[in-house]
Image 1 (tube, rainbow, N blue to C red):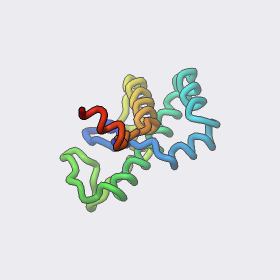
Image 2: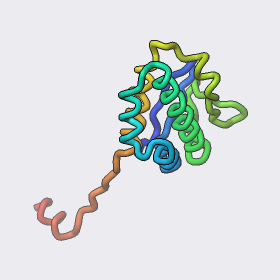
Image 3: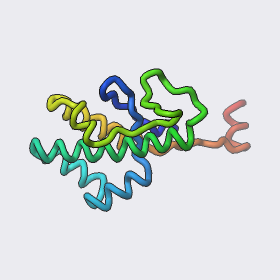
Image 4: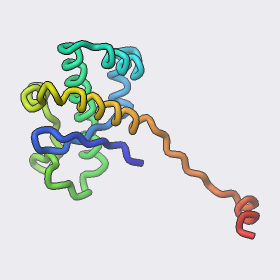
Length: 137
């Protein structure tokens, strides 16, 4: 299952993950992911910027942690934010410098994409002997 969504910032592709840890922090701050989405949709300029930056900081930190724990042996793309062999996060201050005001809506869309990707369940059907035999005849 692919748990990672990538977002390009200042020429680097940062991984974002809507993990259990991210979900917990969102619930603590907003009450639920749905309430966070609603807050983002209703927010005006400065408030929207704060929500987007906070969410990106959270999701990128979870994405980098995922990559460092579970995919450290997988070759990284050239534009990966890797320092000393580890995926590195982007601090809030750097995001505020790198991201333009007209990029905020695109960033909000990427956050929603990440939450959607992290919320999807992977279901694997296992054929049972009797049914499998009937379909093969």
